[in-house]
Image (cartoon, rainbow, N blue to C red; front, side, top):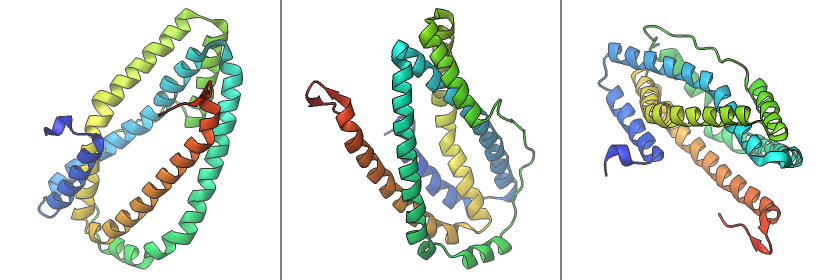
Length: 235
């Protein structure tokens, strides 16, 4: 199978393995180049997050039409309840399981002995607005387009969604494995990977289990509200 045709998860796993392997033989100048790329890419991700929220949420609300008001209230309430439930579940899981998995003394000792890798330069990309402001703006523009039935604003929001889709598909997703590669390469060069990787695998396993549990619970709770006639809506 060609690398370009692989899914994102296999690419990330390959990037992790390559980053750890390359970190043992990577010279410092190469590590600093990857640190420079990671710094720029993380700034770009932070810049894009509010745009992604506006680009997807506002057109979705506008496409609902005049029903957006009632559906938005119901959806927001349900999402808030699910968020609270997931937050409490994560909190108590962290209290119960993570203290036995994480050894702060070992990590601090590794940090003190590690080599610091600094990028050659950084480029600041402050986001246009905060995440909450982007969410509120999405509600305002989406509801305005839905109730006023304006074709210009709705078309603009749809075109913005297409632009954000292109940015995600052509820039963020292709470069994400490179970003992951740089993270693990730098961790290996600094000598942190041995102490962090075992803890990382355990925590990822717990997080994955929580994801599956929350998704199953959400589907079981939301399924009765997604009935079409008497037949439950299938995934």
